Amino acid sequence: INLERSAQSLQRRLAATNQVLGLPKDYPLLTFNRRGQPLSALAPAVARAVEQYGIKVIILDSISRAGYGDLTENRPVNLIIDTLSILCACWVAIWHTPRGDESHVFGGIMFDAGADIVVQLTSDSEATKLGIRFDIVKKNDLPDIPAQTWSFEFEEFSLKSVQKAGDFEFSELA
Image (cartoon, rainbow, N blue to C red):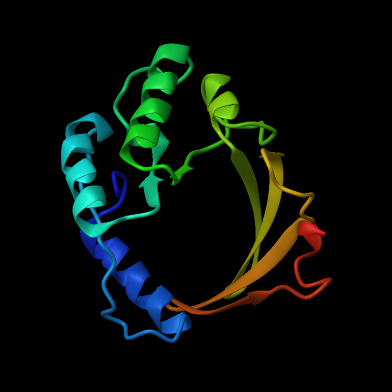
């Protein structure tokens, strides 16, 4: 569910990701491109697609565009979490940290309470590479998983490769 980016941007990103995965560039991914529309307006169509296509996981980009109101209040946060949980048993939602404080997500405490797993991403870049460190900062029913850093290499506006970063490849993330 793409509420944030243009359809063209998402298609370009999907083609590059498909290529890195060894799939044809035009390998399809069912996507709701609805930039500027709230999740609440899309929920009935998403529910039908989940049922029709047997979708097991939905991804929302981004919670900040969900359109349920002030994300610092608990009611809108609970509505977002409830909507996602009703739509699909397994969901991934992308959201942001407050400016100047990367220790938690932006918005009400219920985001943390309602999530089974919270993965914090931090990044560092060098020339044509982007390093992203993945830290699981909240988990239910998972063993301890150490942080991992991955290297994303780009050429022009396209993803070229993804691989586990070397031990000292992104010193800011070590």
